[in-house]
Length: 178
Image (cartoon, rainbow, N blue to C red):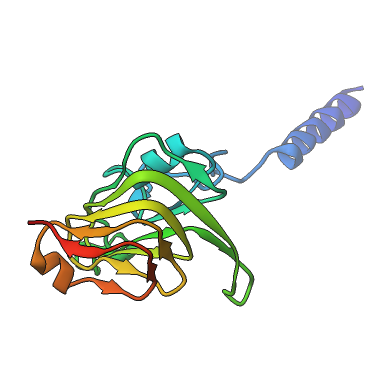
């Protein structure tokens, strides 16, 4: 009888040990409280989400997922660096398009608003349409060749204009604020 009791205890311990897990990771799906959101991309399904993604506390790349209409200006603000590194290049992008595996643009989105206000240095607006004006208050604005602005582009000063690269289509006027 003692042998059966001893065997049952050994089997119970063995069963519990086999069912236990050596995995010490938590169930946070890779999320880390110290995650650097600056280097993340943000897809926005609505105007509110795009406002948030374009803000100072947003992400370096802002990706609208459809045509959107804004009742007020969309302000792109904040400094974002390549790779989130302190010495990384300053860079920001609005990618108003979808692409295939070979990075060919498939769909382009129209963002309708009174003004796109650019306060982030080196903002690249690529593959889509700003249906409204663009007001630039930062160095290095790039309107990619795949993008269109239906309104005017106005630079807050001549230095901002000199540092810009307008490759895309501007249907309105390009000027420096007086």
